[in-house]
Length: 270
Image (cartoon, rainbow, N blue to C red):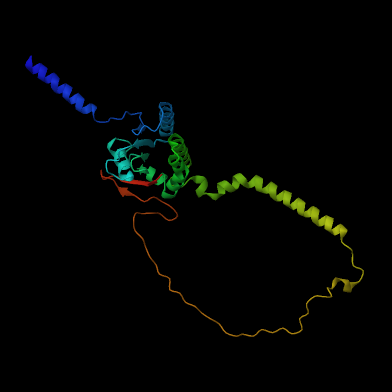
C-alpha cells in the first residue's frame, strides 16, 4: 500500500512539474504572453494563420512577451521557433513575428525555404508597413497587416525570393497596356485637333521674302579654334564587405541560432 501511495505521489509531482512548462498546441500559432490581444482578436488571427499555413505549407507564428529572458529580440524569436517545434517539412519552413514589450523591440525570424521567400528587402518593406501600428499600440492591426504581406509574398513567390510582379516588369506592362494605349490615343487626338485649328487661322504669305525674319541673327564669319584639353584620372578602388551572404539584386542574410539552426530575419524598435 505504501509503495502504491508513493508511486501516486511521484506521478502527481511529475504532473505538477510538467504543467509549469509551457506546451503549445498543434493549432496554436498565436502565443500572446504579453496579453496584447482580446480573445476575439487572437482567435481571428489564429484562424487566418491556419489558412495561410495550410494553403502554402509554410509555418506562421506570432508571439508576444513581457520577458525576453535577457536575450535580444532576434535571439528570442529564433529560440522560440526552434525549441517549440515550429516549421514544416525537413527544412522546417516558417516565419515568426516576435513582439518583445520589455525591450520595445520586434523581430522577424525565417527558417528553411522561408529564408529565400522573404528576402531582406521584402522583410524591410513588411516592417515599414506594420511597425507604425505597433508604435501606436494597435497590435492587432499591426499583426493583421503583417499577415496580409506574408500571404502576398507566399502567393506571388516564384522560387527566387522576389514577388513575381515586382521581379518581372512585363507583368505590370501587360496589365497597364490598355490604359496606356487609350491615354496615348486621346493625347494624339487632342494634338491633331490643335494643329488643324492653328492651320486654319494662319495667314498665307503672298511673297517669298515674307518667310524671312528681318530681325534674325546673321552669321558673317564662322571658325573653330582648338585651345587646350584636360584629362583627369581617378583610381577606382574595389572593396568587398562581409556579414552574411547576399545574391546580386537581393537575397537574405543568415545567422545561427543557439540551437545551431540557420535563420534569416530582421529586427528593430517600435
